[in-house]
Image (cartoon, rainbow, N blue to C red; front, side, top):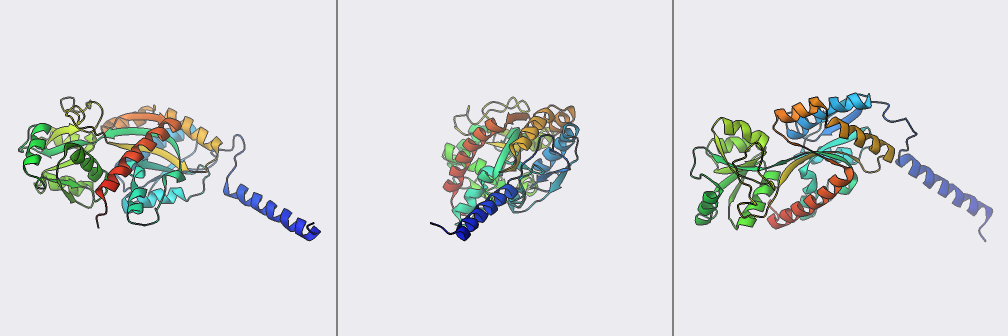
Length: 330
């Protein structure tokens, strides 16, 4: 039989383990949340998609939650720094992430190179999807192609010669173009740049032949007559470009969206998540938020946590396969 000292030590160990669990997992009493400002991390610099979404959402959430909602830009490593910051933060509902579609595949890039992932999808608790914007294929205007059929025909005649710009290796543009090239059996030449703006300027300057950008970015260039819109990656035609066919209707079974969503660290108390989900559901209907999204030509597509999780799982599976197909690029 164990001694009295042994029993006491065992009891102390169980008590300390329980206390550690309680300290690591915040528990909220009814009516306690939120009682202080909430921080929303945008993992890219000011002016980008994550930043614009966060700054449109913050004032709408403030009205509902009756607490300040502060946007903090924490950029670096293609969004991974900001994502990691939230992933390892205290899961108490006061640090949130305005995440983009890079969350679906970035950990797979680390795995590809034998690195420990900077963050994992399993470290986040979805709150809601806010928007889902399909990419569009653009070419300089004037240019050699009037439509997607001519682009594909020319690319097949000149394998490896038609160049496209992206915001970097394994960027969303890189993955979207790889999906299209694979489906159409094309050999396109990838020219990466350090960001979306340099990639667009390379096209406008005639240094590359094509690129892939969100409709919100393409609109200004299209209206100015500087680019042609050849196709989009959606499942249906865009309201912004109703005359532009989808890649699917052109015979290429690919879809790609640049999405934005609100997430919390895994382990955030269910009570806080419930409040945040309800607040976000109301916030996306706020006139100010809607106007901000309309100003950047981004369609609001709201999905609650469970629906978004299902969508995210499928998106991650699809994009991780693309990363593996691309393989290591040093």
